[in-house]
Amino acid sequence: MFTIPLYVKKNSGKFLIKSSILSIIVSMEKTCTKCDITKPSSDYRKGRNTCKSCENKIRYQQKKERRSIDSEYDKKLKAYDVKRKRRNEKNNPMAGFIQKMRQSVRISFKRRGFTKKSKTYIILGEEWVIVKLHMESLFKEGMTWDNYGEWEIDHIIPLSSGNTEEDVIKLCHYKNLQPLWKEDNRKKGNKIL
Image: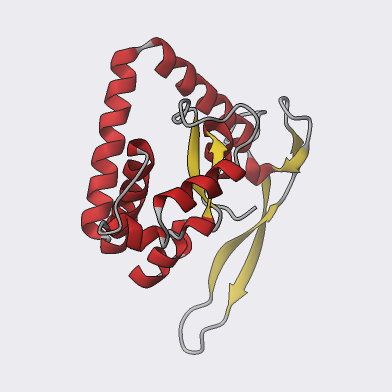
């Protein structure tokens, strides 16, 4: 990236003539050394030949690797995540409500059941037997109730898309739930596929 100086004189009526320097930034493109894709220079950090998205992927892998090796580092990051989530729940009441809904559904699946008098029955909208049969019909090869934890309950339409408490409760209905392998659920995030 380089700049070309351009001199302009401004007349301001009774005042003296002033001159100022304007810069025109000419955009250049670079090719990333990792992904071999040509991108504008704004996608690179100063003095680097790897694009920002590739650097972020590398940083993520390094962090993931370090977490698997260093248990103290992993505990520290988990504690930080919990603090960040709790702070978000305090500042944003809707985030706290969404977390309570997720937790209620998660606990009912871990216990493998709930009563008709429970809040979970109201949230899921059906008895445990029917919810269980629905989930089992969506199981992928290798999924069982015994390996719950390797797979997770995913909301087809994410809870984060709900704007009110009523919307979030509707999104927790059992027809909006599906079993996904843990890794696939992490990749999906809060997107609708």
